[in-house]
Amino acid sequence: MGKSAASRRQTGRVGQLLFVAQQAAQALAVERLEPLGLSPRAWGVLSTLAESGPLTQIELATTMAIDRTAMVYLLDDLEQRALVERVRSPRDRRAFLIHLTPGGRAAQRRAAAALDGAAETLLTPLDEAERRHLVDLLARIAAHWQQLTTDPPGDGGGIVTAPGGPGRADNG
Image 1 (cartoon, rainbow, N blue to C red):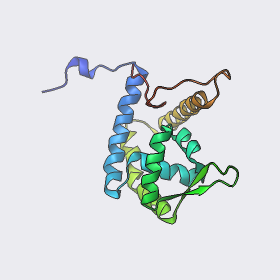
Image 2: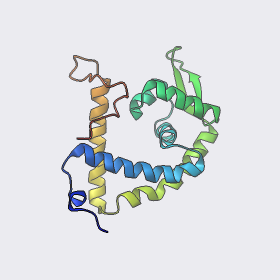
Image 3: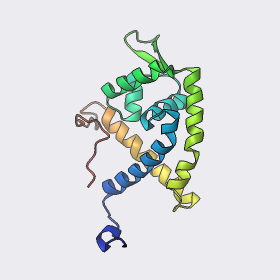
Image 4: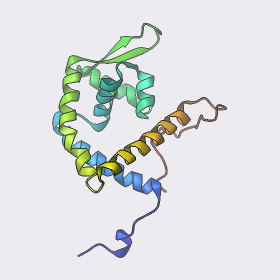
């Protein structure tokens, strides 16, 4: 039996389209990362640190749009598995810089290799120019959202986020 006309209709709701695309990307990531003992969030921490170098817990949580408390639990797990280590910041003794360990670098490389085909699978309907354009647009949206959620109120930003954090948006 085929899909109903209602289920085949394309929505114009940006939130819904982003949600469906995110769910597809998440499913592909879980499928490839689970055998390595990593979650998509753990992969996000490892890849962010590999790209940027050491960050404080707060910088990492902000960059990844993850609630600070959730980030602490995630880092506790990664530290217990010897994939990251917390090192007191030389600039601020109250803060810790999160560093990748050699094991964390190896896990990040294995996960990157496992994820190689995921983007290709997800983006099959798009040609190369469309893929670059999509990445550019998503990067602009992500940068804008990060600015809105990190600027203090009164500076043109400073959105107060829901208890679930900035990643919990309306899908409509």
